[in-house]
Every structure is written in structure tokens, then in C-alpha cells.
Image (cartoon, rainbow, N blue to C red; front, top):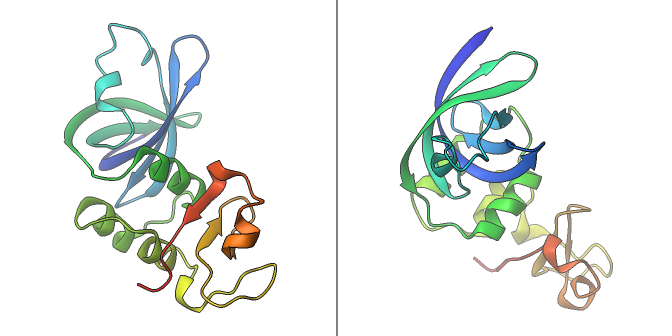
Length: 167
């Protein structure tokens, strides 16, 4: 059983069973990590307030039959919308450190143009997947394609990222 300690941004939390939680975290050292915390949904849980989306925490976890979160201590709140964190959790690959994305999330103002560029999608040189229009304004997370306004309006709203490709 290996134990790790890392600074992590909580991207997402989901219920797992009656009292457990499943958490998607982004760390500078390990990239995206998905782990569970036992009894984190109990009203008396000492972990729960440190594992809310948008929180930067120092976490301790072990690798034993998956990843188990053992301890967490909140250090700050990051200034990124919860919906953006949820969409990021879908786009970031597991166990792939992205130091530039870490710096963007913890330091300066978050924007999708820079984030998508760091993750390998270049909004500046993209074209609409449906019609070929240059510099589309939307990114569809489900298909991982760019779309212009006319074609993005047909996609599910909760999976569309509005970007400013002119930045």
C-alpha cells in the first residue's frame, strides 16, 4: 500500500453508496485523480468541508483497491465557476500532470481558450466540425469538437463550452 500527499483542487464530488463520496481531484504532481472517501457524506464528517468543488486542499491518499482519500485540509478557494470545474473534470486525462493548467487554475484568471490550448485543442486554429467556419466560438465536450454558433445551438447545453477564440 503506497501513501501520497499532494495539493489538490477538487473538481467534482459524487455520492457513492449511502455515506461514501467519490471525488475527482486535480493535482500538480499526479494530474487527475479519482478516489473515494469513506463516510464523507455523514453529517459529522471531518473530511467533507475540505472536499467541496472549488477548494484547494492538501490531501493524503493511499492506493489500495483503487484510490482511498484518507485526509484533507483546505488551504484556499479557487476562482473558477463550478460548472467550469465539472467540464474540466471531463476533459482532463487521468494520471497526466499538466503543470501549466495547474498554474492557470491556482494563479491567474481562468479562461477556456488557454485551458483548451494546454490540453491539446487549439481554439485559435480550429474550424467548425459541421461547416468549416474559422475560429468557432464553442467547444462540445462530448465529441471534443469545435462548433460555430449555428451548430452549437443543437448540442446539449451542459456539455458546451463558450470560448473567445480571438484571445
